[in-house]
Length: 65
Image (cartoon, rainbow, N blue to C red):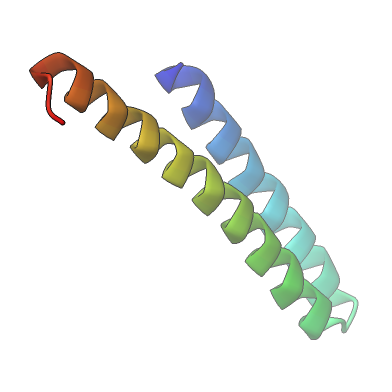
């Protein structure tokens, strides 16, 4: 679970950086920024879901609430 997600995040980061560079070289800087924002939003959603699972696991371990 952890290592697989780390590779997914790294893959998205590499893909976004390549797309950003290619779009910027083509003179479409606004699309490059939009691509970067979309990649950031996708990774942020993954991290929020992982944090939700972490908090649920902590509650189950310590039998909180």
